[in-house]
Image (cartoon, rainbow, N blue to C red; front, side):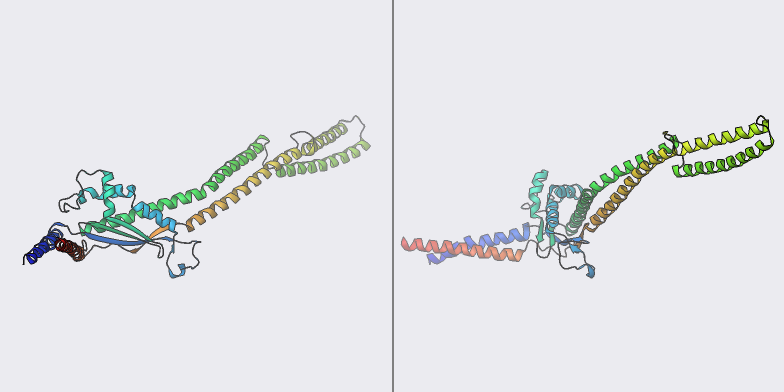
Length: 361
């Protein structure tokens, strides 16, 4: 009888009392927690990493694992936590008196303490097979949990946009630098041509050459007519006649002018049109070469921008955060079952040990 009483006392002390204390703690002390969940993927318009094109279904191509891991790291980073704390006052929420003392954050907790505390409430997992990022956030208010999770997704999109901008800048920087260089060379080449034309008072050497040749042709026609008049006048007038002298002087002047115009057209001086034409052709050739280079760099820049646009990534929300209908955490039933099993196992171990000791006593 004494052994039976001792066994009952042991059962009460090792199972009933601890189990009752655990139930009181679970039901009366532990605060209800509300969990919001969201699933996101990194979408991409075009990707060379997939052999099956699902774009015809209206779905974006999934990004690679590196991008997803970057998002996972960012969600759990100090930058994300600082943004959430500054915007939604995480420390104030988790240190409020509505939170049980067991889970409550100290009101004077530092940012580093908050960073070590938050993995209990914010979990991020990446499914490498489905390429889905699953985010779970627990809070002590159902609306607060959904609001913070929405903010996490929005901030992650900002992070992805920053990655896109950086990638696009890196991809097009070389061609933009080349464009700036060729643009400066093109401006210099155009200015060189304008300076040449202004210095020599030319529109173009071709138009100037045509003008001179027309002058020579007109002067030659006038010279032929004047020489004919000299021949006619020399038959009727003496060599010293004023009219004959005037015609001869006119013919000589015309011949000198024709020679001058011919020298201007193809003479050996630096101001000769042929020499100016050669100089202008060199300038024009340089301008055309720079212009061709400019157009080539422009095409390459546009192609680089198109390629960067094809690689733009964005977040696609597969499952949006919702306001939890009820507090699913803590799971009091599961916790009670586990506690009961552990306490029963502990009780039987102690009871068997006591029985063995008594038999050998």
